[in-house]
Amino acid sequence: MRCSSAGLCQGTLATAAVLFERLGNPAKAVTFQTLSGPLVAERHDHGGVAIFLPTADTVPYEKGGVTVPNLDALLKTVLGDTAVHSLHYVPSRKRLLVRLADTVGRAGLEALTPDVNRMLHLNDGALLNSVTVTVRGEVRPRFSFRNGGKHPPNT
Image (cartoon, rainbow, N blue to C red; front, side):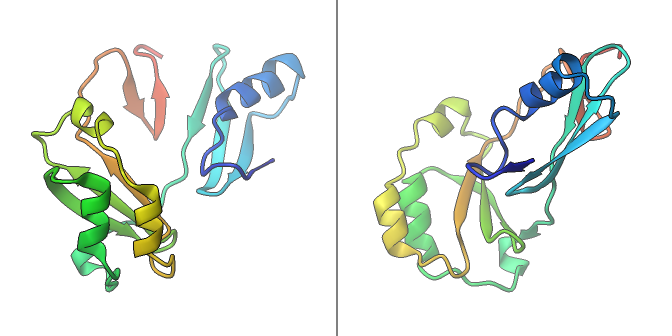
């Protein structure tokens, strides 16, 4: 299955559940081809489905060997005056990952209002085709992460 509208299909987990539970697909796992790479959905004996998200190698931006033209202006357009913790680059996807400073929480991230038209004007896409902005996550004891998948505790 090819997901072409986004890097990761919004309905991948639901689609896998339908394939396994409603349509009776006997496979232990199904692989979806996404723009971010293969995404595997695995059937579990207890009836659940786990997804394993695609990964890509990142490098600290300053060590990536790439100089994105107008980077300072682009970051200002995306972030305003919001403080940055670190920049990483994903060469295989021409993606810039921006982690905001630890003093910036989720509300600060959600308050950003990037000017997309200005971003397009500043960048021709040759070395950069997307910017992902994130903040440090919060620890939530309700779920545990094992083997790249998200599972409820005690499973």
